[in-house]
Image 1 (tube, rainbow, N blue to C red):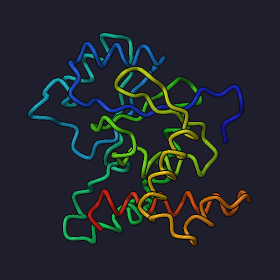
Image 2 (tube, helix red, strand yellow; image 1 turned 90 degrees about the horizontal axis):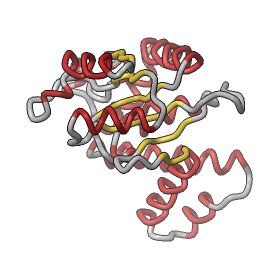
Image 3 (cartoon, rainbow, N blue to C red; image 1 turned 120 degrees about the vertical axis):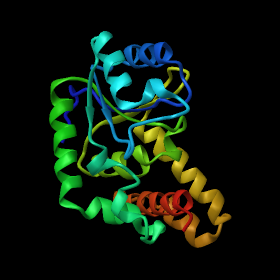
Image 4 (cartoon, helix red, strand yellow; image 1 turned 135 degrees about the vertical axis):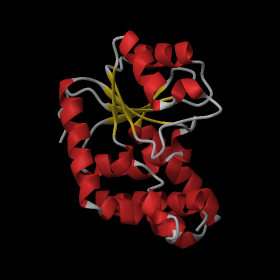
Amino acid sequence: MADETTAPILTIGHSNHAIDAFVALARGAGVAAVIDVRSIPYSRRLPHFSRPALARALADAGIGYRHLGEALGGKPPDDAAGDGARRYERIAAAPSFTTALDLVEAEAARATVALMCAEREPLECHRVVLVARHLARRGAALAHVHADGRVEPHAALEERLLAWHRRRAGGAPAAQSDLFAPTAEARGGAIDAAYDARARWMLGG
């Protein structure tokens, strides 16, 4: 569990940035090492974000690179025929996922790390809806780097997630009661429900 002096674990999306812009974005957020959580760390459209080129560019900028997409990626190769809406549950239940989270926390204890995937918006990416969700359950401090350099605290992101879930619920009394319940236990349940709904929305379930 993070204490008050621990730098947060960041997340970042490479989006369609030029490599120099991405490096500047990471530097501006104080990133010392990028942890790539893409299942397939290659891009035909943006070849500078393919694993070898990205690792070289980051090394030239004095930023470390590590790929953990086999365990933390959102599209495991053995899941092609699975139920998409439950994919994240299966990934999170794997021992390799837990081991990889341990590695992320160990790296974060030494330096500021950023979990990187492709999507610009954190709430449209498994780096948040899957990986950051489970790091937060462990008590890790988290924040999210946006394309304009703004760093959003995880609590603010979860407020956006809850607001999205409220809108989808259509203001139904039961959903409103759950989402605005004052106890920490009830709030945790509301956040879990919102993450589950977001995962289904992303995975087409």
